[in-house]
Length: 368
Ligand code: GN1
Ligand code: MG
Image 1: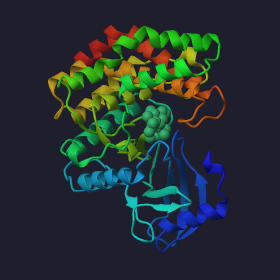
Image 2: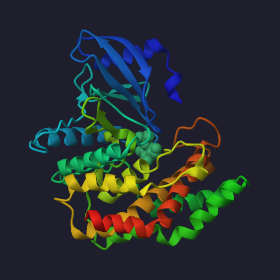
Image 3: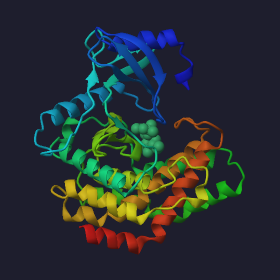
Image 4: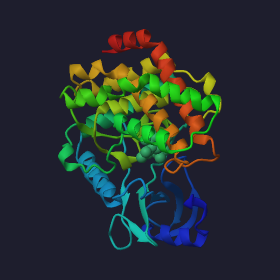
């Protein structure tokens, strides 16, 4: 919402807080994030030709300084972690300092920060090929390996409740009780879809509480367009968007990566009825993931891979649908029914995963 409301001169002046000795030549909207406002800044005569400027949504990230603290802890840890891969290019976005040396710049209560732009690469909003899926999986595995020895004690919980499905379910139930529910066949479908699966929504949290799955440092948001693909080699060279790097289950990440990368139509499609989970992409992604991650996974981790794929799609559907009922106050939207449409996509995807349970479990067994 704020993206378009700041005059260009003001944006330019905020960007120059991070441009060091360089001169800001342009600032333009960048990417397709649902929470923060993101801009690409071009610079003349500085250390970088361009960098990424972001306004953190402090309605979502209530303690943005902790987000920056986690990002620093992460990048210091990974930069010092040599030997992640012998031959691959692997980049970690760098936090840029403001003119006063701090990690951020606050003006009129708006919280701004900047990170380096990783040159020679691009992102895609939808999966492009089996190779792309494999690379994203490989990248997620490398990322997890890079933080496998980053103690969760060092990481703040910057977004309490994030990926705790039972909490999202509770928020949905509250909205269902307190808001006016629009009447349409799509809404009825969503209400029934959630009601039919309520009991099972605790699957990962139960496993966590029972000590079956360990808490680790995770990415939190490894959707397909957060993987940077090298323009020349087509290798995944970075996993960006580090706001949600914090303690969690790797299953939140595996589930998010698969629900996002194995839906060829992508999460923004208007054709929700045609959405499906593509098992071949799932196989490629899991193969890539395990190639780089199997070294630190425990046996029990594999028992929850199918569940997490189904759950994170279901969970995101609940999150979108609840936000729709609440008047779209969390996710940015382009039109009034946008979050309803997104919810339908995720529920259809979860349904497609359910209908292929045997095939998917066979794939998990084969790649194990
Ligand atoms: C949000 O802002 P963005 O697009 O990076 C959300 C993720 C969702 C995603 C769905 C902090 O991420 O959890 O999976 O939208 N991030 C937060 O597109 O809620
Ligand atoms: Mg994100």
